[in-house]
Length: 137
Image 1: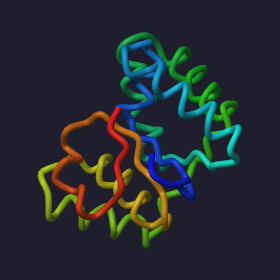
Image 2 (image 1 turned 120 degrees about the vertical axis):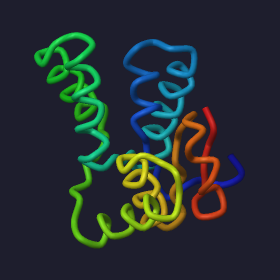
Image 3 (image 1 turned 135 degrees about the horizontal axis):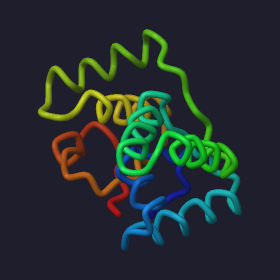
């Protein structure tokens, strides 16, 4: 990465890779550790947290989903509430691009946080590379 970002915004793809020990999960773990060392905030919207919760609840159980969300909180990831400003920005991404609404929230948060970098491997974000800075996992 060329410069120190003001924050890392994590999307659901990155967190699922991390939680399920997928190949990109190690890279996510390294970036989380580096963020702690450098004092770089880690952020996610509550919409993306909800998406992770329901994916895990379907795959395992609601209890395991609860534990995983708690683990993310313990990792120091700040959960950002979806106020109107963020919601409108997410809706604009959704209206203008073929992407999920939850991905629109991740993109909106990355755009809203000046100097932030979105961590993802989700190819849906290719279409918004001109709008936000992306670190591809």
